Every structure is written in C-alpha cells, then in structure tokens.
Amino acid sequence: MKKLYLIRHAKSSWAEPGLGDFDRPLNHRGKADAPFMGQRLAGYGIRLDLIVASPAKRARKTARFIAEAVHVAEKSIVLDAALYMAEIPALLQTIAGVPDSLEDLALVGHNYGITDLAEWLTGRSIGNIPTCGIAAIEFDCPSWSDLREGSGRLLFFDYPKKHPGRK
Image (cartoon, rainbow, N blue to C red; front, side, top):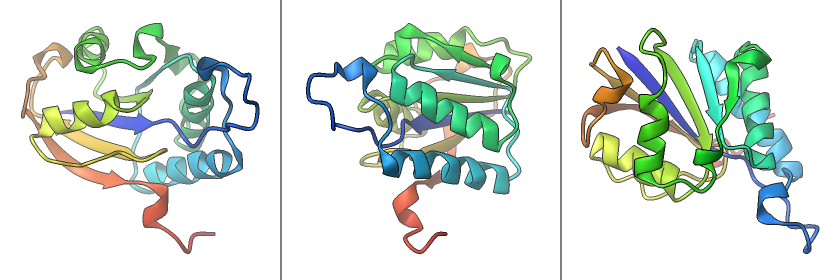
C-alpha cells in the first residue's frame, strides 16, 4: 500500500511588501503550526520515507519542521522546482518519479494544486486544504505511476484550525 501525504505549506509572512512570492518566509503562526502538524503526524505513527517539497522558502521550512517531528533525515528531503505553484499534471509527474520501493511519501507544496490533487485522487470534495493542512491518501497499487483519478482512499484530513485549544 502506498500512502501519500499532501501538505500545504504553513502560513507565510507578508511583512515585507517588496519580497518576491518565492522568498516569503513563514510568519509566527506558520512557525507554530508546522511543528504542531508534524507532531500530529508523529502521533498517528507515520514514518515518511521521503519528503518532496517546493523550493519556495515557506514550503522548504514547512518540510523541515515536518521532517524533524517525524524523524526524517535532512537527506530525505528533496526540493523539486516543479512543485512551485504546480498543477495536477506536474504533481503527478513528480510522484511518478519516486522509487516504487518507497511506501510513504509527503509532498509539501502550494494551493490550488495540492487541494486539486487531493480531490482528483480521492474523488471527494475537500473544498480547500488550508495552510499547513494535510490530506493523507492510501493507494492499493505497486507503483507510484499507477495513481489515477479516484484511485485513492482519504485516510484523514487534518489542519491546525481543527485544534483551536492546542498548546
């Protein structure tokens, strides 16, 4: 069984108006949400084999926070420029390039692509994956290149604002 974790980057900062979109860092909330959601994954007992992230600063930082929480080595985080603002075809191409020996994959990227892909793969309406939201999807297939529309089963959909009283 393959498991795919689609993660939208954590909340970014707009404090520097002249800063380009690619270089926007996480804001205070994003820096709190990313480790929290990483701990949520760890609490589910999830062990990621690989994290592929957009190289945009906010996605890179989110990936690192997630990796630290689930004990993924830095060498198992791959930055892929194709994920920056990617749509479904580019996301699927990235996924198809992952070695089939790996079972648990996380993609850290941007909307609308992340939400669109989650809905396309599961055939379910999610509406929107908010910042630092995670859609976990399971596939009964031997190869990452076998993913098709409606071929996945949504295991869970979690995001920071689902936990308003968290510490």
